[in-house]
Image (cartoon, rainbow, N blue to C red; front, side, top):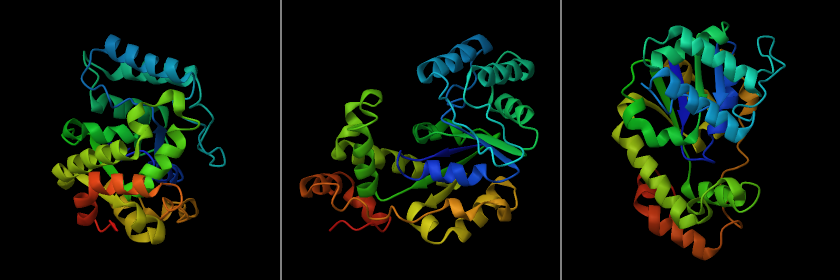
Length: 262
């Protein structure tokens, strides 16, 4: 069984991925995007994956945690992508399905009983991904004020050249957050949903649910990867007008999920 981690960017997807990666029975690539194009022919799928690698030039997934004896620094470069595509070719029979991807990942990482990928924008494809019996989906959400503050800090700075104008305006980020939350609500019965603020302040219940969802022992997660220093960080990072813009765009959804709008 494969799995994905989704949610609006700057919502805790990376931290959740890092926690999962510490588990000896899990393997998680980072923004590989290999579940974005399902049921393609092998040549079309291979072109997509190689295109992903070319755009990121070896950054398709970062160095694994090398302190773990089962981890090796093979995520960084073209040889890993090549080995992955060779395994996909081995298991496909005309189409690259989620089951084929699952088989390929688990043969690359035989220590893992579950393997998957983390990418925020999987949240925009929940209609397809939640319908796949070979994929278990995990969705994490966070206060859109903190999401907007953290996102614009990145997209107006180091990520300026790689992200669209939509992600440089708090109002438009809030509108995008609402779209993703509405998608999550439509498919909630097929997802494991985690509230960021609950997770970072009291991780045990969420990790128990995560372990049950992925069929692994929750004791295998390293709790030290969870930190709660990023709650309420929009204060002082967004102007009063930007805060008002976020609340105007997302206020009703914020209230529904217990986030302050005043």
